[in-house]
Length: 447
Image (cartoon, rainbow, N blue to C red; front, side, top):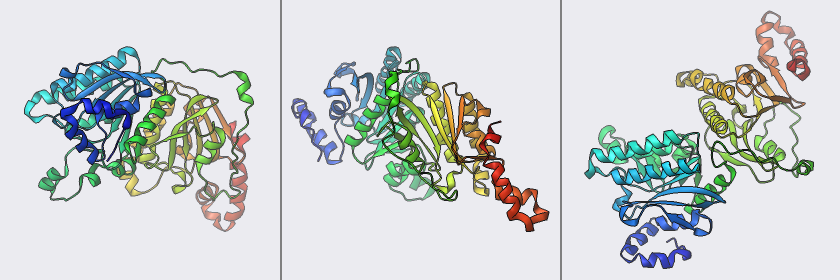
């Protein structure tokens, strides 16, 4: 049973809805007004649509982390939160309002899907929402919180938006439900296994953030709103000069052995402001780490290869994950800093069949297209095409720095010797040592 004492009086006033509210609580879900009370600063907001016209969705305006934000929250206690024509138009109105005011938009999803009895009109409601999502893309931040079911056509609105937050145990997303799948394919699967928090957080990559409770999820959304700009025109606030004298409070020691992995998050925590890093899609595409951090109070987009996971190679998922993140940062004027330690693209039949050429090209395109300030730090390995893809100077990086352990080459020393001196393999060790000295010469690489 979930209780929110601040809402007791308001909930008692609702009278006839009390049984439905209790039913929500029994499922581990908050009532729509509880969610609004928690997400807005001091629980203060104004409703933009009269109660008799809401049709199962409450549209509000208020401050979140000090910024004006429009929220459209579905009410599962009204016809299961199902989406009809009026319901869809109300959400479309919410996005239009956010665009007009140039402020972030948040949708709180808790719906049984399309209102079947309305027929094609319910589909028109979905179309109105999708169209607005696309028009708002890259202009205002769009965030979706999946706190209940989100099925069928309803899943595409969150998918178009910038970030999806899911609540474990209650948030679910799928095109077709378990019953339909069993009828068509004879496969038996639970709703949680099919489209739950864990599935989309670590396997499909659809969800960027997942939390155990709605309270944790709402707090994380508030934190993200505080980090992101209000819109794509907001200018970076430059802090006073005296702040640059601050020294890092954390230390980082690069492993002596170049074969020993390390966690790139340690470098990020060493460089950026204390406790400011908010990682995106931490459980999917784990070979690369992306997220937002503060540097002297300025929001920075961070991209770093993760040597702790399969040596930090780029594959289909890591390329997609990083490319999407880079393009978001570029759209909203967020500077990018990348940390390169990559041995190459993942070889193998599986990756080739998945289309690693196509997926890998997305990362190249994203960095080359980006016009925000771009800085790259080559930490250790920077080999082959993956070196080019990771924000290299050839793709327009403004500054490229080399850590003292940096190595830039087409191949690693051992691999290069195998190719260049195959006939003289007996002298492989000597050649390898000579080539490694050349590769490790960052002065040569920067010329």
